[in-house]
Length: 438
Ligand code: SF4
Image (cartoon, rainbow, N blue to C red):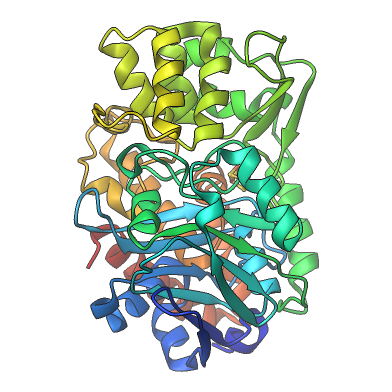
């Protein structure tokens, strides 16, 4: 396999949260041969630096290149919520940005005694004082970052509320963290990670042509109804939530290189959301709220995204009889640090049918369950596709929607049939280790 040079920068960035410096080390080709990348290689790095309780942010070999939805960054860490090792997929532009900044993996080690923000530029990282980010909501946080460092190309933000209720966000629509990435960042006293990558991009010579062909095939039988946020709600049977999403005057939003987006920007009538538009990206969070408040979901999801609170935690309060108005004032108090008697709920386990909480650790507990909950084979196939995507550095939602990607994605990393076979074998056994967390 000779994809190492063409798909990676060959660099790991080590960031010491307790200090102010970072250093880079080489990404050994032997490590890539054995673990390929993403969640599998993250785990190897996690184990190497285990004594420092690291959070490992890792790209896959396809991240940032021309493969469909090659947008993924994966965070691997010990969850302060469960004590177990877990992976959280981070989408939008986070993965490509890490590669554009000249790295493949970032290992965040130890704890800071005072609040800090991490700023990753091309081939360097700085740790800056983060006191001014205390208690800031999303819009204020981004404004503060813009003033200090320029508009972030990409970010990971642990939210402004109690870590046990927060969900790490990578954009205005929240994220897929329901396993404590926000809490792990908070434990290290990290207020945000900003990435400003503008360097070149490693990719294979035939990748663009291959990608265009695959994307053409993916779109052949696709209907308009299947594209966008509501398309996913339809697929997972969340009918009530799907009815709350308008099908017209909607702007679908895509992560890097995603041909079939699952996010939508909705213009909501004023008074319903508290803002002119809302980015919908967290399918389960939206569905959980819509179950209780119907169209009132827009006000709540906007407040959740601004505060960085997990909408499913909020849905648990609604289930316990707390009114919408009380929820909004509760969130405001949480942001101001005035509320410490915080009810924590089950954070979404109900959506995954027979999967246990431990089963959900490998994908962060926030992805839409694109499988038939009554069909074991369908569940197993979904788990395998999700794990493979999280190793290759491709969005697991797109990989789960299009089984044709099972063979198409590894084809970017193999030059001949023999290599393809070896790749398939490695990927299969690594996916199993990612799923079981071993
Ligand atoms: S399927 Fe959704 S989350 Fe995945 S890459 Fe496309 S837009 Fe992003």
